Length: 454
Image (cartoon, rainbow, N blue to C red; front, side, top):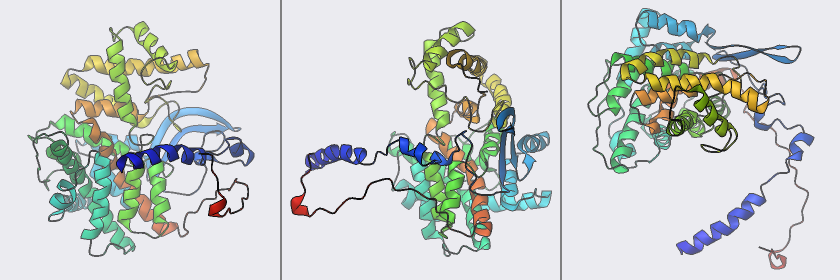
């Protein structure tokens, strides 16, 4: 029976693929904005937001002029935000979550109250861990996270109320619970798929988001201040990236239907799970491991350049011709997230004795733009994006690669929540894009007269 099913799927998968392939010329003929992109690569304007902004170039007589990248949260430059909380030797993620949700910076008293609320909401409902996570483990933590979000609907006494008061409550509870859901999903995966010991550490109300996550994923619960500071910084930098990214747009699309918070957030998790969105830093790690294996002297620019040339010429690594972590759809001269993460990564590399590996990253970052211009004749300005350094940071923190994208989700849930509230308050219309049908009219053929060649 199974063999017959497999044979059917194998034969008809080719038919399904062939009958869904659209003539590529049609996209030009009908001026289709593929991927909601304009011809020059910029995004099609489909909405307005006050939450985040990504600025990477200016237009001068319709020509892109590269500038240093700028990321703002509610109008505040992320660099100023980071410098502010780091100067006071504080963690920043809870503060950035407050800013994104409420549109203003908290006072000291408001921040303390918000942190205490998050602390009280980190623990999952009774039996949730056993019934929803341990009894149904997944090999993929993002899959488990999405299922945990959807399961939370069943534990909510008022799940479908879309009043802002109720949605705000739900969002705060999810922001608090995401690290616990991800950590327990990882522990279940380790135990049931990797056959390691099972460790379930209860979240601590006195710890912030970054500290709690390290406490819950490590068997001994130990971490250094620098480690938790670096994870916190990474989460601050991943918390929001404007309304134009795929998962934030998913939030707007799904929320515009009037559905519940759990369905909307789970859709965003599914979007982020895609390797073209949230999994890019794993590609960087794999690429750098490949470079380390094939370059004997990491400090020899000529040898590194020779192997990068092979990668660009599709002769090495995954043969796609891509140097992962380099370049961005909007940023040109720099990605401010990468700049901030690189500075902190340098300090941790010294603590971990990984200065040589850190220098290899900076060498690849320095040589890649020169090689693009030399080999491809491209004048496009290319700089490292946040994914180039985030994977290296997580690796230095001894965080397994299967948790890289869940950490992204743990941070971005703050931005998603803000976008959901903004859509409910200011959206008003269901988002319904247009698709043009390009198949010719066909007649219905009675079953007895059909004769397919396959």
